[in-house]
Length: 338
Image 1: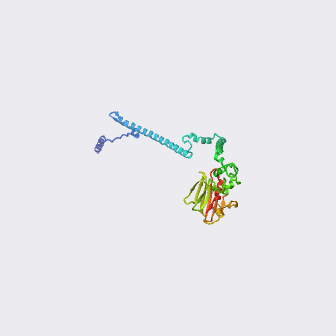
Image 2: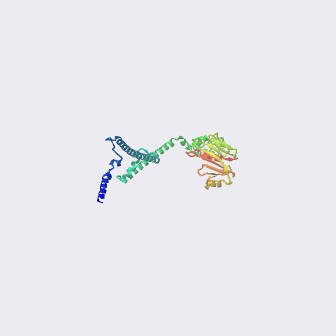
Image 3: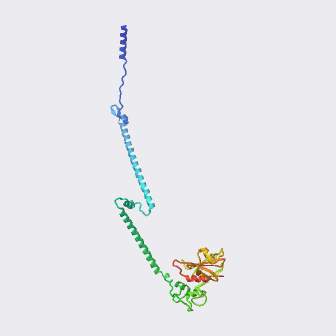
């Protein structure tokens, strides 16, 4: 029994010698593994190809980082530049006369006002001084314009001819049209002054009707059967239907005869009131060729009616005023319905 036990022990001892337990060694990963860098050794030499690739990768990363920074700066300054152009365009639209490229001039006044080191009273004084200077400039311009206008009026020979040299009531321009003597109130020495004869349709330079005067003629409207005297020096222009006839004195003024229907068959006073909403003064109601007519208060228009139609005679004045007021009254007095 002991021999058997001893034999068993010997067998176990033999097995222990033959079978050995494996031993494991614990190895740590190199630090270069975490960073992605390895130093390989082949045949006792370092792998330079792997090292170069790592450096190239690092350089690429640095270049990419610089490129991103440069791109950001370009975008940033581009936004500032575009914003500046947009604001300059806004300032130009608001004030086209301003120099949009002179930013110091544009903001000079604003900076002065916002500068806390400058007192408000000084700013107000500057503004007042500027307004005073502008008012002085405007006053000087107005004075210069008035002087020029006065000089033109004084030197204009036509206006001086409107004077009534002989004091007979006809101005000098009318005397020239009629051929009367500018220095004699009674050109034909018949005891009646020239104005009285003209208004009563007599010849101021001789005997007979004013139509005997070679400077006056008669216009006859065949469609509406009326006639009127006029100076032959005036040009006549009529519409094709003869409702309007103009006697042109010059480029600035003319006398017009207009015909229209008297739809409500009113007398001339009522018609005048319905047209102009004015009550007619008795002194302005005149009788012409047996018909009542109304002279306007400023004496540049005359209206009369035969019941069916209204005849209007207008004096379109020149900017200088009525140059031929008595000739116009002569035309009114000569108007006749046939």
